[in-house]
Length: 389
Image (cartoon, rainbow, N blue to C red):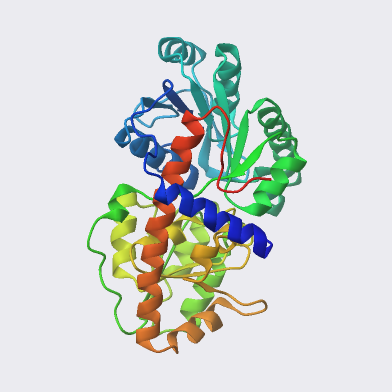
């Protein structure tokens, strides 16, 4: 990102922060969010569940169409390359009933799966504004898996699905500059940058003060190749005086579980709820996210909001946000995760504490600006995004 672009983004975010009327209660019509993810099961599902609650608090008439564990369906299939997640086939009749009853002014499509494609079709049929969230380049992520057939099939499907959504979208919102550029190459006509939201529980006061020594580290996310979770296990081996916790589910679960059983200072929790995640963040001193590819890294923002240190790889989209990057730590090129942890542990405790306090302020600031931006996008005929292509 150029210095000018970074400056423009900060100024635009400041404008949203200072707006006297951020538009709560000024709704042009109902909003329907459509997602292929179970609520709070993964990053995308959590993002839109948080957005739903925040829009409701702001006076918007918002609802969500997504799979539900309480409403099981016979039509579901394992996600290629990750049998712990499912592709859900929506009920066409339920979609029709909801869309005809609500008649939304805006439809927000979160994912390029069957739910998302059907949501886009209904948006066009009803003449609703179609906003597409571009959080993950799924065809790129599947390149990391070994099964050649599944890799080729997944790449073909997601490329086609993304292009269909981007062709008909009135606006595509991505959460990093790299994703903005990719959306443009895939055919998006109008692209903007969206900020990341926080769960309401992470905003509660007060945050637990950061302890002096760096003694507990947590990783939370999909246990998949792109997350480089093995580097967390290796760091636990190398740093026996630090307590490590891994939370999540995914194709590498069995490997993580078996290795954790033999490492005294490593605890594996499996998949945990958002409430439990926040409790684990409060217990920890630092969160690590050493991903090969990460469009943003929402869990790092959640850690910052709880006044915790965040250590991320340079490929995480969160480092593209100027107000955030100065308040987190990055793993250097050719530096192991263990070496990065040692580097940060050697810093004076007061310095780490100051970074954690600034991190919370920056995270809460971004959260408010992101909500105001979403309200502006929904209520405005023309988008005024935080940063645009």
